[in-house]
Image (tube, rainbow, N blue to C red; front, top):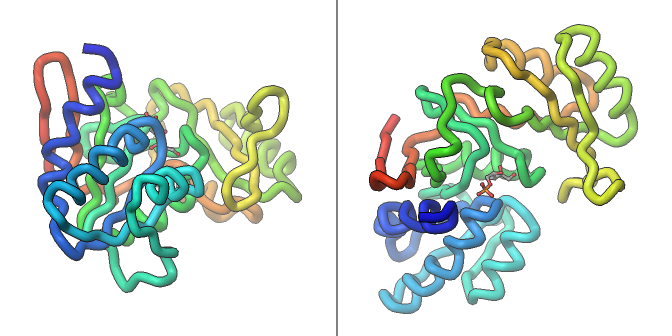
Length: 227
Ligand code: 5RP
């Protein structure tokens, strides 16, 4: 099975939880982009209606193209289920997210949901956060370099501004992303607390105590892990 097949193997368990009338948080990334057409098919085949709220402009565009009704997050009272991908998942179901740079809106929507479900293949499972993936942090353009220097001198981790094709990556909120090379087992709660209080930091890619369920696709089958 290739990676896309492993991702797709998680969809059945997630889609089975979606019911008529629900407000669904729709995440970002390649896993969710594969899920959206299958969600649209389910809605059509079962004649059910949902309202989607999206964690990125790209997801909203794709979902609308598939005929899914999308609302602004400010126009919904609550979210029943949010479904998203992740870049790393530890044993406590804490995550690193933001590989696609959508971490702020993802955190708003995933935290707001009554149930937050993560879909991933088993390459995302790690012993500690930061083991395989850099920690994305969304920062204001105005003082991004000062923030990066502060992090590097206080925390002794490299903070690299994300670039795409030699130009700085810009988030849907008009900000930059700093990717922090953590590389060793640190206290994620303490690191988040430090980062979030720096002037100019909008949000970090640590998703701590937010996940309710993880559905993992692997060559030996699908595993559903509940918090
Ligand atoms: C985007 C994210 C994604 O959920 C994360 O990067 C996983 O993406 P993929 O499904 O492509 O592996 O956090 O900001």
